[in-house]
Length: 469
Image (cartoon, rainbow, N blue to C red; front, side):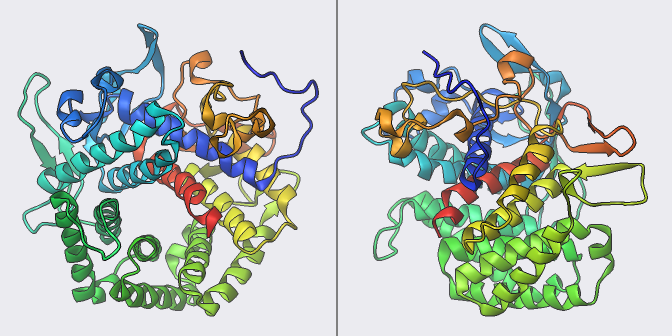
């Protein structure tokens, strides 16, 4: 039976509703992409089951778990044997490090999430082990196939013949990004924490090696920190975010000093109003606000709190009440909004509201969410609300009628499900707003893993951790 809710739906959205809806979208879409889309190189369910101590093979035998994810694919789905499938002929077989690192980090976060279903829901609890085992296989794959001769991770193209079992890759280009190395440093380290005991001892051999490998990457940053000075401002912001994340996971003192050094460098350049900042004003300000808040909560660094206050005031002042979005390119007839820029803007404000108990602008956050995410066409579809017999439908997974969560904890009723419109629950690359017609136009219905994995991780990590800090 489906709970239909009240006759009138005029309730306003709370900050928690917004983050919960985006978490539900990210969690369910990631599950579908990683286990069912085939948008990448798969590992067989049988091979995956060898890394899971207690699992019913029937739960995973129909899956096609991904060792890595391709950069692009069509979001148009086809219903085959009661399953929504992706068009394998539309995949762009480039393998981007950032997308894959963020995919693995998201799976590790969700592995932690599903641990709470022990003695509540066996299948959901098993997802914790499935995601952890898959993360282990992914990290092994990255180290084996996605590095150059110097040992750094770089983007590659999967060039194997369709019928060949041999894996072949071509280097996309010779350049590497420090931010990519930093994200994988976080992923390797975070995997090891699942096996750490109270004295920081690790008995699992893979986890022990992955922790050592993560610290090797950290040493690379410490030895070549001068090279960070030469990268773009946006790249510095991404490195800072990854260092923030690494310190959050590890509490490593060396990474703390590197984090503060990078943050100071960013503030110096920010005050100089460099070119990157002018070109990507909203994205840079949003990323800097996220970094500043994270540093303040990680280290109680008062300067970061002051910077956060200033940036929040600046970003909130850009909001246009009539448009329901932030102002941009005021002289243009049509304005483009990148999906990652939009979501970073929203989360920078959500994070500030949550961490500093600021409820003054909740109406702005609600309108921003509805206009930029729901009504704009930025998301092609949204996963259905869990049924009444699903523990996730209740507060604390209690299954008590008094704890039943409303539909708006999971989705808005105006957006279709993937089953109804046969489109994946993903973010399109960008939307454009026509000022004269006062309407949005979305870009083509394609899946970009670099955009979506960033957004999914942001939504999942925020819900899992930052709301509880």
